[in-house]
Amino acid sequence: MATAVSASATISSASPDRPGSRGTRVQYDRRDGLGQRAQEPRSEPSGASVRFLRPGPSEGRRASGLVIDESVLQRALGAALRTGGDFAEVFVEDRRGTSAYLDDGKVEEVTSSRSRGAGIRVVVGETTGFAHTADLGEAGLLAAAEAAAAVARQGGGGTRAVALSARAVAPEGSVAIPPAGVAKARKVELLKRADEAARAEGGAIRQVAASYGDSWRSILVANSEGLLAGDQQVKTLFRVSCVATGDTGMQTGHESVGHTVGFELFERYHVDDLARRAARRALTKLTARPAPSGTMPVVLRSGGGGVLFHEACGHGLEADLVAKSASVFRGRVGELVASPLVTLVDDGTMSGEWGAISIDDEGHPAQRNVLIRDGVLTDFMWDRLRARQEGRAGSGNGRRQSYQHLPMVRMTNTYVLDGADDPDEIVRQTDRGVYVAQLGGGQVNTASGDFVFGMTEAYLIEDGVLTEPLREGNLIGNGPEVLRNIDAIGDDFAMGSPGTCGKDGQGVPVGDGQPTLRVTALTVGGTAG
Image (cartoon, helix red, strand yellow):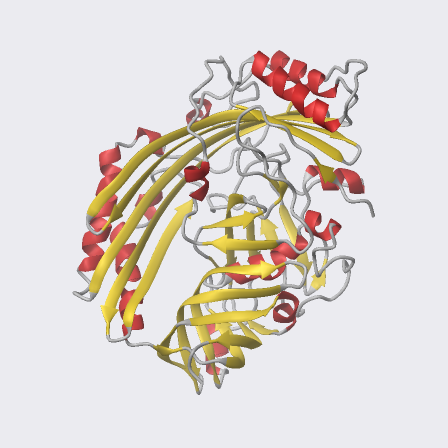
């Protein structure tokens, strides 16, 4: 099978990332769900007068301001196709955000950022030309379109007109309190409250760090197939981490919440509670014993281990990696690849969840996609290009970090459905093993399915009872083996903490979740015998 070749050109100084290579290594980071903020250039508005042409989804989002006249988009697409492209797309983005950090009792940084621009891609056969620009005026868009077309195909000939048809899209949730309208002083006050609450848990808490972030992202997508769609996404995040010091050295505890909502996030979650939980996690580890090592049953608490399924099988079900033979699931649709107890879903329609979207970054509506049903592999996740090559519909999984990046297949909210078992009974029926209440970040090799994750909160199971807390341990395994070795699934589904998934240099917000479940045999990498 021929491998797609990607080329790129840039109008601005940064270069877009290229598709990955076989054996792609991906990683998941719990630390900062708005992580791309720091990587975005703080470009100033170009002065172009732009506005959304599609029906505004809500009053709050209608006030966004992004935008471009339809005739300009048509001319840009025409320029992109002038040299004979098979497909062209204009992706426009306006992103704004606020972040604040507190460390060691002091507010270190309060920043506001803005990034705005357009990425244009042209596809000719198996070659993709891509250019991006921070100039949203017509001249800037036309220059980017011509640059992308030149990369995709040298030569000239003809003009193609594109008739755009606006697609009405139901908005993803609603924003009760737009963060941009909240004074920075209130955001800083959240950090101070978290610091005080964490330190009140005991003198052993020596360091507290807290961060607040919100982002507002407005996108507009137009392509040569006549699509014109847009969306606005508001996300709010809070995170706190604590360091406790004792006989076992320094131990850490973390807690974070993030949703696709506005400042009303803090009507649902109290930062004092988050801080206390983070502090108690750190304090608990002061009395923890080193994690054991060896192969044993592992019970994952609901919401605490979804990242394992994101990594262990989610990436292997992304169509771009499948096409590059970088997935252990290639050619296995219709086969039993997991325990019959397992049904795995990727769902961008989960309103308010961290990975929720109305449309993906190619303008396709978000979908709920069942990837594994009762253990049988049913489908992969698709972006527009791969779906087009296969003559099928996309699945709403074409996402990109920013207008400076090409879209690729990405997850949204990935989770395992509820089972029928009593979560407490799952523990009682485990003679000896490890109970993982919270997993941290990790990595997976999608070609082999091998992964490693850190355990940030875990306990020993002895005679069906949780006993001592554990520290300094990892879970090491293989995705397909984990799927096959699940023998019990509880009825207590919960989503986990917000995360940022890194793939081929691009980070996007993702969510995950799962009910309590047991893996009969998994390698625990601890320091005890």
